[in-house]
Image (cartoon, rainbow, N blue to C red; front, side, top):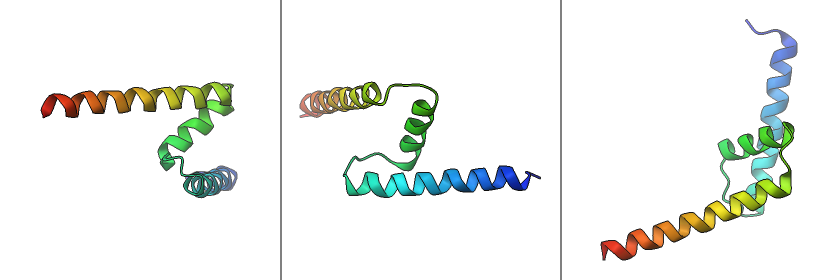
Length: 75
């Protein structure tokens, strides 16, 4: 059974993700809770937030191109 300290840390982490999720929704970032959690973890482990944002934007652009090419090929 986890200690009370561990449980309170988990609860605090859930609350942080809840707040970030609401902010993300308001800002229309299209990041789900799981993705937000991964981003927070990466930033906590030293990843530059600006670099992470750039990578996410680039991946979205590439994903959109792949979807366009896939839909163009199927027509």
